[in-house]
Length: 280
View (cartoon, rainbow, N blue to C red):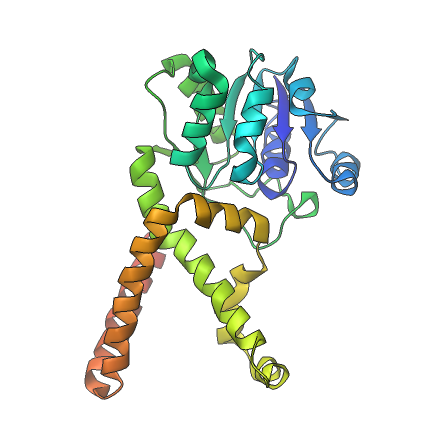
């Protein structure tokens, strides 16, 4: 199988490495905006060739992975309109991606099987790519009515070859679920670091920050452009989650005058997290 990767970063690069490790691809062509990143991708053996644009990369490909920031998807899909290759993606939002695909691909929309690997990290670029990134991790497919069973099965096999666990859900449900457990935490981490960094005594505050602050804000080292696009494209769901979390913060503020109630909330939260960790 010949693979084209549009956006050879953490997700795109790891997809290529994982399929190479599984001997599921024979040739990988990469496309990206950063010359140095593409050069590194070739040096690391992530890609075998570099194409000047998405259309050229997909010309002889059997499968195309679009793994760029989601705001770029419509332009990329337009470049792939005349390709015959099967297309999947790694976008963290699905409603906007599907809308962009419908607009750009027209009657060829059946060639696009939307996917989201829930296997990110705070590092980005080809340097962060790993053949084992998707091992045991969940990949969500949000198939379209226009997708043939063969197309969906082929994309499932590709992600399964990477070691992923495959599940399916509607795009609306996907964006609501991920807003709560992925998009909101990233936004909060970025906001907290920005708040501390903006204070007059920020150097002092950072010098005393230890494991708790480091763990909570780890994902604030993630790719700013990518997360800008995710939050903006999922704005309605993000506003719902922010409103809900704001109400929770008001509850916690009130509990500062109720130590027993505060401890109860902490205990319930710890139990819920421990239960989740044990089952994952």
